[in-house]
Amino acid sequence: MPIGQAKFGLLGGVADLGKLELIETQEITSSTPYLDFINLADTNYNVHFLTLNNVGGTNNNYSLQIRFSADNGSTFVATGYQYANQLNDTTGTVIEGNSTNDTGIFNMPNITLNQTGGGYMYLYNLLDSSKYSFTTHQSFYETTTVGGTFRSYFGSGVLPTATTHNAFRLIFNSGNIANLQASLYGIAES
Image 1 (cartoon, rainbow, N blue to C red):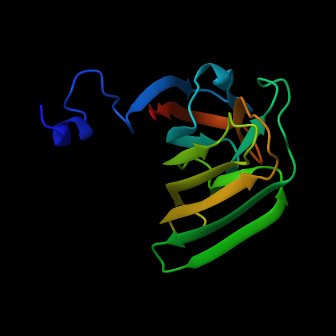
Image 2: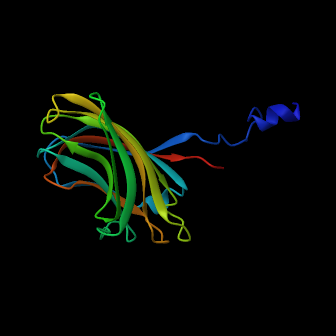
C-alpha cells in the first residue's frame, strides 16, 4: 500500500485519531441538585467532549455551571473560575459576560422555568497535572422572560490551577436540575 494511504489510516492497526469514544451517559428525570462524572482518571484522555440535552431546572433564571474536582468527586472547587462568554438572542441582543473569580464555569445562563435547552462542551487537560483545566462551550435554549426568544451562548472558561481534575459536577446556581441527559466522550489521540 502506498505511504500516502498509510497516512490516512487505510492500513490495519493505524489509530483512528479524533474518534469520539463514549465513556458514560447519565440522565436525570426528576429533581436533583447536581450530576457528577467521577473517576475520569480511568479514561486517560487529554480532551473530553460533553453533550447536554433536554436541560431543564426547577427555578426561573437558573444558570448551569461546571465545577471540577481533584479527589474523584469527594469535594468540588467552588471558587476561582474564570470565563468569558457571549449571549445572542433572536431579538438581536448581544451580551458579553466574564468573571475572574466565580463559583463555576457558566455553560447555559438564565434559562426560565419549564424551558429546556442543549449544548456541548469540550474539556481540556483535566488529567494533566502540569496544565490548567479549561473548556470551550456552546449552548442554545428558549427563554420566556424575553418574549419567548431563542438564545445561543458560547465561550470559554478555565480553573487556573495546574492539577489533575479527575471528576466534574454539573450544577445550577439556583434550584435543582429537573431533567438533563449528558453524554461524556473521550477524543482518541493515539
